[in-house]
Image (tube, rainbow, N blue to C red; front, side, top):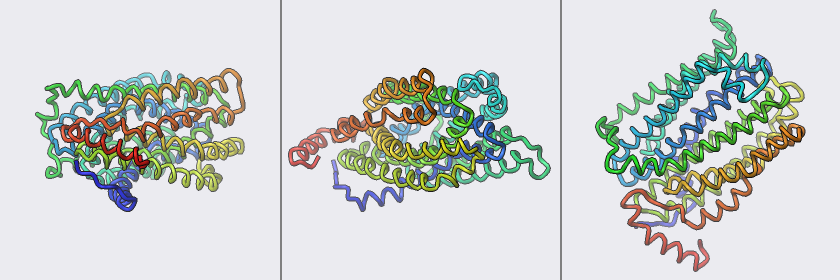
Length: 472
């Protein structure tokens, strides 16, 4: 096992060449719904609130399929480190089929029963009426979303970070132009409002998938996918994939359910609070989309090192990512608080909603920093082959602390909105204590490749030695 001490200089070079392009691509690919919410701001608080509620439905959809994508990323990264192209092809096919099944289910419900989906989140009839055409159209974009995600994950894991970035830029520009034309009725087109934003999201999704397929099919030198291997899941592969995916799937699914319960509480607050929450979710989404990309990048880097047998390198990368990402989050959130008025004014909020938004950003200055640290470490556990610990910790803390506290504050005690909001992130500090301990322990290093498994004894011996000399 070849291990070299990872200096901060070497680490930052990796961040610049691999992590930042992935982070920006993830940031751009997840901003379609955010662009919708911003550009619909001129239509008033009700329109902002309606699109915000629809975005929460899309977040639940994301939680339901991302377990398969996360499992795919784990296998992609480790197989790429071991240069196992057949394993990558099989992972791509299986992940795609599972994700498409989820997208078709959600898309069908969104198209056929949009009122039912919206009524779960809010009891405001005027908000539901605006949201119905939006979520019905966006339902057709759900299958496109999962295809784009799995192709992007495949290309990121094989260190082709520029094509997904280019495709995301192209899709974002398409979405912005169509929103401008259809929301406001430019160039003789009908003024469609929220429905126009949904059409922009659907068409930009088509553009993104088509562009990704062109890049994927043109580059056969880095990795060639063969249909026979893509759908060959024999030899225990299906069982191993499901075993690795199941904890991640449970993590994302239960997290989505927990967030849905929290969003139900928010959906029963005053309309100004709902609108402020929709605006805040956009700002939070910009921050978290970027760091979700950094988390994916850290997974690629750590998974490659673990899969190729350089386990101590992967261990060192995790510790450095866990320091860098929260530090950047804090700086961004602090900037957001200082500039809260010009940013919140983009959403056409009233005075009360603006007041809420300002102090929500202040609360997130601390909560978001801790949350980013937890998210990065959990992503790296998965890349290292361990998905159970982070899953159990997040689910237990969410349902034992955050969800009941928020529900009681909003639905039983009827506290002021900002007090309710402050309970949303109460589980993060508890998770941080346990995750810092687990990261340092190195127990999350569980390779799926032969090269990785062969390096385990030396890694454990090196870790034990470093602890004896106080360097662990």
